[in-house]
Image (cartoon, rainbow, N blue to C red; front, side, top):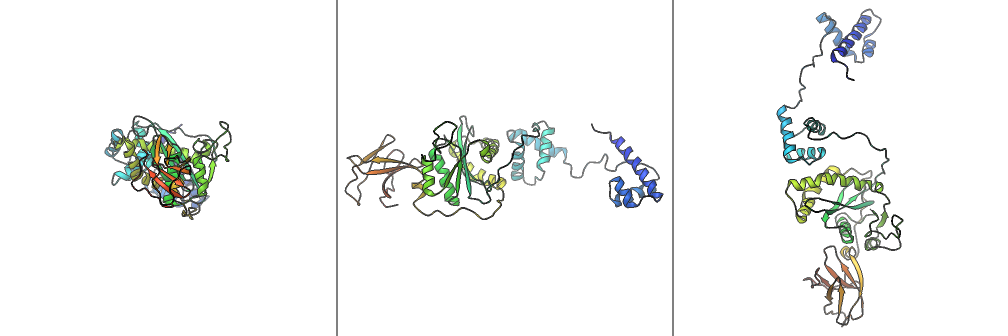
Length: 394
């Protein structure tokens, strides 16, 4: 319960008068009087001198009735609330404040000021305080020690839901790859790994859920089978990256919190800019949103040294793809996904009839046929020969 200001002033002056009389009688030093009043010595001396000058035992606080020098004008508050109502009504408060600081030149109000203004105008509902007690898992001390990957199905920019596949570093929360796709799967996972390695290098471990494109799980909800590798597992082993399975949503807390931020911000920004197609959304995500997100949400790792190392070896694209074995038919063709792929004439041998070959299905949906490390031909997603068909050893 709040105490009336007049009562507070009366109690303060009664205590001051008692302490001043004791000081005047010589039973209290200035330091002792100031300590009893809970102020410093200069404040006590100022109060004493003011009482002597005015000759009265009480006076009003000079701040009462005066507006703070930094108080915003009503017109400024009205302008901010109108901007929120007209354009940013689906932004959360922190997102709105970040956008104001970025887009409106000269805006310098704090997040708390914006929050109070929007709450006073009843444009946002105050959040509930408190929550369950939990222990945070420490981050990896260096970047490149652990990479998370996960996907979120959501209505990001249009009428129907689609998936956002995100790959991020555990050490500093840097998003190393992010893109929209119709549905996550083997190829989308490999694309995230490929973009991360191409931009930053080989990392130590890869942390994911137990989705069927990541792991074989013999029993629903049980342990993963680390001996039966999926295509993602096979590619990671080939590169030399350790694959780690998460067994609960809490174990993926870093990814879960990141997706809450993305779901709170991305749809609002895409709608603000009138973006309704996947191509346009991916362009905005890559060129505009991600640099700003990483700048705002990345943290400084404990150890500034990086665990990323350069990749040396077979082209990554020929590893981070779906690989399936086929036997060449008598007419030097193979069948794959309903397409007939014709192996062109090779200078290395007369034909490849009954030879065991590997079909590589890339994240771009292009195809290639390999005999060992020898590329016999490259094809587009329709099975037609690519313009840059190569027979070189890769």
